[in-house]
Length: 132
Image 1 (spheres, rainbow, N blue to C red):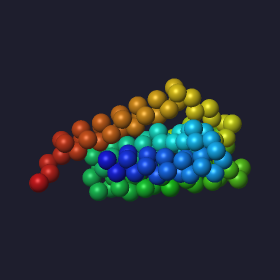
Image 2: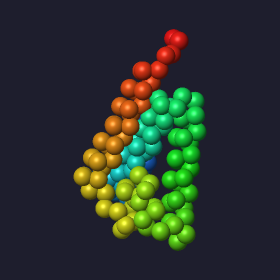
Image 3: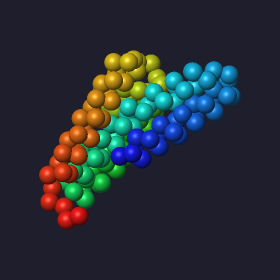
Image 4: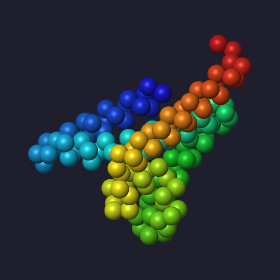
């Protein structure tokens, strides 16, 4: 979980600083890149919850969810996926388009969803009989 949370933060902060270095607006660059962090955390939380509940099949659930989210976004960008179907993806709520307005409530809500999924995943993982 440390890597799933910290690595995207580091990568997106570096990308935001590089973007800010290019256009002279460091705060705008950071805001533009780091706004998608809650969407990433929801996907990581989904993977943890699936792994806790479904054991090894949970990894398949996590990768499938990520693949579907990417496919939905690509399909939406080219006009093959409707707005309502695209809004199923957590990335739709933090998308740079005018479809979503990622305000503080949206970001906090996605972060709470991610925390809830991680809590469920860690709880169900703890209840499993693991030979450590």
